[in-house]
Length: 427
Picture 1 (cartoon, rainbow, N blue to C red):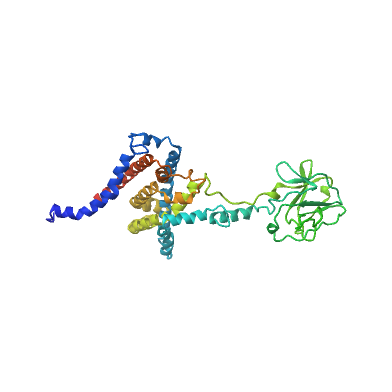
Picture 2: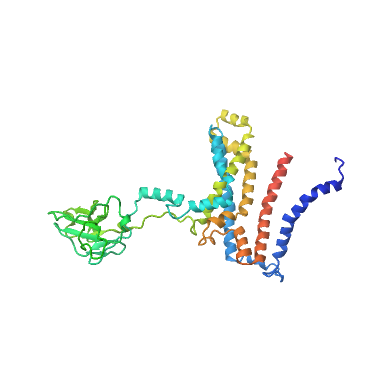
């Protein structure tokens, strides 16, 4: 139309066409051809590699996880982006908030994977997620300080079915009962523990003490008697049991001493299993059952800011007169949001959701880095399985078939996006 000769136009387009052919067209064509050959590349395998996609357990797990990714990750990221964009529209610090939410987009997938591998660490002293979870748990259910405690030799205690320990013989009023235990490392004893004391017997009561019956050094100390360096078990629960029923209970003082009322006469003393429960160590975020949701959470952390920025740009173009008219007619904020804001933002929401769908179909970095070797099979996705088949298992034919299959999955989403863009142009 401008009079430019087609040869000149072709000359200017040639570098771009060469790069496009070398980096896009040729790899696609080669992958398609290679997917029809066997492992060596010499024998024609037909569609055997494609049949493997639906018979191999690893690939089927990857396909299932990809479906979970496509359904949940774009939906949640888009919904959060919409909420952030709408709620920060009217506040003065909205720009600063958007900046903070968008900042993860500046981090590479590799760095984000390393960050979240630490966040999800099982050890509460390292992993932020479990540190918070354990803190909340211990607020309502305090863990035992004596998980390793147990009776030593010649102890008056014996194990009970279901956990805990009980005295071999009933106790009587006026008795002073010694309940020595061992097994707690000195550096793990409670900070409020004091030197153990075995109180004298009292009429009308049952007294006693429970303590760490261990003194460093061979031949040092008297078994069954509190020594100068031995500490009591503060907070240890002691129950008096008759005919299977608890008739009295108490907890040990800082020096391990305790007192039970006359109701304990003739009862067995029991140290219940709750005294010896292992400390709560949080949730196994990267275990087989939670690894995929955990990785999706890290993806949403990165991409919610991307969705928010695009939706906020679309929200800025929404006619304010329509919203004000709805408010004048008596609509509340929820009705304005649901009936006006969301429908007018539908094209932008579609762009964000489709973009994220294409993105999650190719997700590789986060799964490869965050999922430990023990649960990587459970977190497997198609892009990761392509890498494993092509490089770890030396099956280039199957890897090429996975690549072609991924391309076929992306094409319908891209076609939908192109049609939607064309409709927008016609309007």
